Length: 384
Image 1 (cartoon, one colour):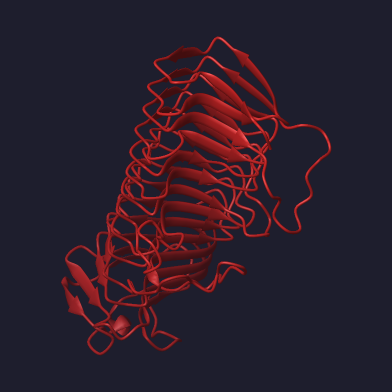
Image 2 (cartoon, one colour):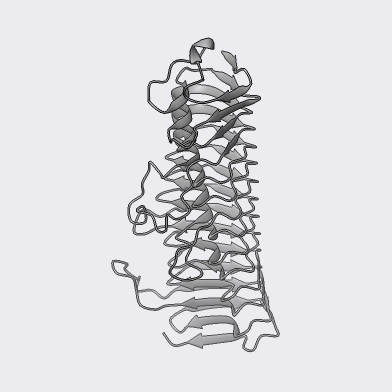
């Protein structure tokens, strides 16, 4: 493996000379400082600052290769700090990739109905990257901190992607990844419509066929949503494990997952937000062992869900502890003829302002072993 140790200094496009280093080549695209497209290159950036000076471009571009390592550099003020495409066994460790594109006045983006896979700029952008590790990097103050697009079987761990204007860690059509022990706090931007309109910004966002990911042990507090599975009439993101994360202090939802199936939410903290869990149109979903307290509205709110399990949660001081309902159906969505069925067991629900458990009359809710204390009403069936 060629080991490349860049001489410590601050470099721009005009001052870096790749010909001085075996294993590097002159960039083939404009706006790039370092290009890597050879297998087995290890680049040590200790003491190196790559500065895009706010003129766009890419600090480090890795593509069409395998077994590449990049460690201990500072990459700042580009459109994307580090961009990797069609790479296997990439290792990014101990870098600072900060202050790249971050338009805080972006409002709502054009990717709401159709994903823009190219993205809108940010820190680390991975596309078609597999079996790789992104570990212990500082990635704050970017539009997206770390983006995975069509990426599978990667480990994203120990990174700090806080204070991003859109999403701290973003998965689009990306499956079987582990996202663990990261910080993506204060990832938020407001629009001018009303106080809680944060334009789908989030600590972690999954969408468009991002299946079987493990989202474990992340701190996602004070973000637009803490954790968000988004759909918008695209392929849902199913069978993800979301465990031991803290999504509290969101002006919207600590945890949101819509139009998805088979996801498990276990042992998370979902408190001091607008809603603890918003799971509209979710099916075969498990909400188990979570701490859900002091939200402005409901602890767990599910519209048009079915076949879900709500078990062993600690739910306190919300408007309603659990609210399940059917209302007007979104255009293009067909509701099954069978009634919505729920298992609600082992929950401790107390000090609700309105009701512990509220369901509309079309639901079949099996309740068992719930401890309900100091609620104005314990169980209410509402008309549809």
